[in-house]
Length: 128
Image: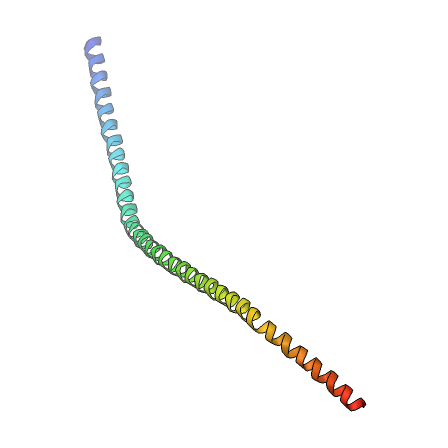
């Protein structure tokens, strides 16, 4: 056997060992990828209900927000109507008061003066 044949044999054995090692490590890599794929699938299956419930929660929050806006607008409208009516009532009360004061005050003054006159007359009458 010549040196070249021995060297060729060593190279063939080394190449075979490298191929076997490559096949073994490829098998390990494939198992890791399959395990990673299974974990991702499991995570995806667990996330689907979470995403669904989050969407339902978001829809419910939107409905609550819309309903709250309607209620707030309704309350604002009621307060505005109440304020307008209160202003009208206060304006009417002010007009009535000024009208009564203008028409009743002279009558009250006259009645007061008549009362004082009658009192003075009575006092003078009883003193004599």
